[in-house]
Image 1 (cartoon, rainbow, N blue to C red):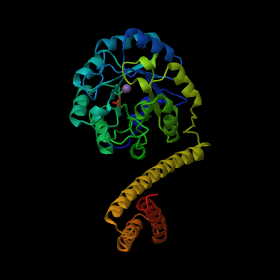
Image 2 (spheres, helix red, strand yellow):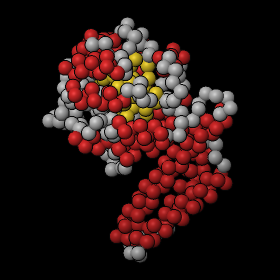
Image 3 (cartoon, protein in one colour):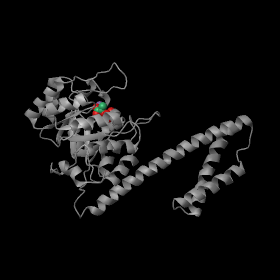
Image 4 (cartoon, helix red, strand yellow):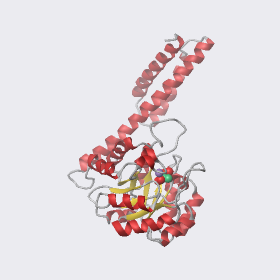
Length: 361
Ligand code: PEP
Ligand code: MN
């Protein structure tokens, strides 16, 4: 697939002076709940109303969505508020029902994007429609799989496209529900600058208190929009209660976000610098994260050496590491002097960690 301006035409046609906003509950629960939220969101920065009708659950037993009847509620919400309607589709049957009910935007969920058979089935069913289709990143951090989903739709003649960054699942405990791995969407954006990129801070954070922070980070990286789970009574939501915000809180988020003008020439310098700096900040965070992990392993080595009564410094191993790193560094455009200094410091910190363990400090 080539980068094509036509992919973002649907977004430009909104003629917005701010990033696109999609908002609404994780799940449609009752007709009353859908209508109440939609009415609270009309006449705001929200252009598209979202609601899950069929909910993919990791384990059976959770709320699996209200199903087809929810589409009628969305039709009513659209008639009453003028908001466009978006639902998640995972099968050919979902797509057919969504099309029959004139749903405007269809999104493919993270669990579905991970399965090329399912995405192909969706692409085949949607062939020839002019709906907007948004592809969430797959649960696993695999850019090719994500892009593959977009390519299957594009090949089926679907030109109104976009991607949603909802973070990646991880076995480690982190402050996020799904870790952002910002470098993946950034790489995608660099390859396809005309493919609209939308942040889903709700599923990344899993926590309503972090929504503003993650959305701001995304806007600093020139994302085109956001999808934020919004519920009239978040604590009693039937799914994803901890991450949903009220319509009032959502409007406060709009006020607090610093939205930078991306397209005016006067702002070009600021916009470029903000984006590049946001990139650097992410890489710096990754560097510290990796160094922290490296030192935890040094602690374990310290313990093993202590148990075996072996000296901390093993000179031959250190010489080997240095030589290998200098060679690798040169390939990446780093000078020998820099790599030597850097690894001396890292080695020193590592020895410090091991000594602490060996001396029982
Ligand atoms: C959702 O948007 O409610 C959802 C199920 O998201 P994801 O596919 O990102 O898990
Ligand atoms: Mn959800």
